[in-house]
Structures are given as structure tokens and as C-alpha cells.
Image 1: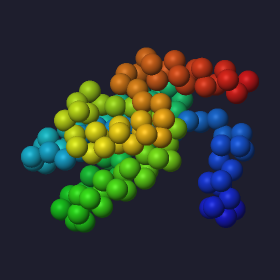
Image 2: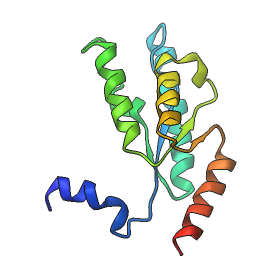
Image 3: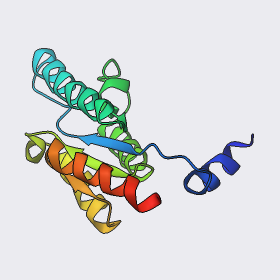
Length: 133
């Protein structure tokens, strides 16, 4: 199947699984704190998976790219990944992250659902399933 056709028909082809973007700090003053940021996002992402949605954890996919391309490149890329998701879940310290603040601003502009806790996300996931029945 052509990738363009998949993207265009994704929401109309009976795909029920939501994709939830995890937003929170990545960058840190040292490798230890950066790894803790990544693990916090991964832990939250696993909780999302247990709720039946697919987590998109940009932290995990780029953990070894530190010092490569510009921060602007990575921020633009993560914003694009987020735009392709169904909702955003924030880590507890998201306000400490310039990138996460930009992601929240963009999600608000797009009127995407944004959650700061798993209970509200779980409720939304349940109501979304009922609205399709």
C-alpha cells in the first residue's frame, strides 16, 4: 500500500487504536538527568499502552542523538510527530521544558486533547470508543 494512501485513510479505515504523544523534558544539564527524563516519559508511555492506546515517546527514539543536529531540528521534528497523534499526555514536569511548552501551544492551536493525568486520558479513551459504536 502506498504510504500516502495509508495516511489519508487512517481515520476512516476502522483503525480504533489512538496514538498518544508523551510531552515532557528531554534536555538536561547532564546525561544522568536526561536519562531520568527519558525514563519518566517511557514509564508514562507504558501506562498509556496498558490503557489500550499506542504511546509515541519521542524521547526514546532520539536518546543517543545528543550533540548531533541542532536543537531546532529536533524540536521541529517532534512537533511534526505530535501533529500526527490523536492526543497529548504531559509528564509532571512538562512546564520545565521549552519543547514541551511549544508542543502544548501547538496542540492547543490544533484543538488536540491534552491530558496531564492518566485518569482523564483513560476517561477520554473510553468515551472515544463509545462514540464510534
